[in-house]
Length: 68
Image 1 (spheres, rainbow, N blue to C red):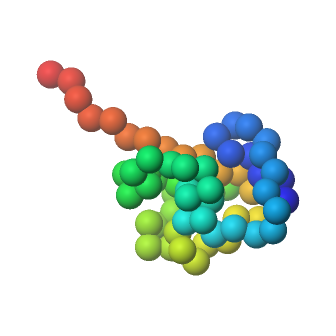
Image 2 (image 1 turned 90 degrees about the vertical axis):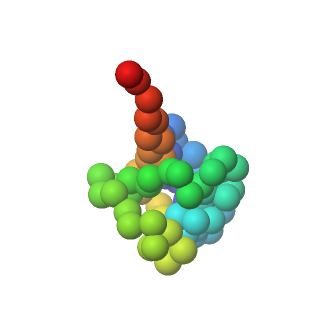
């Protein structure tokens, strides 16, 4: 299956859940990452059940704090 991940087309064999995709992509601190699937921000509780399908667009969003 081909998906667009963070703006790049990537290919994976078979279907994946969002949680499996985070693991496969070696995301550091996955509990600190928000995931957007086809323009919708996912609830973290759905990561283990939400399937990523051929043609989907996935963005990993990292929020940073800081400033004065």
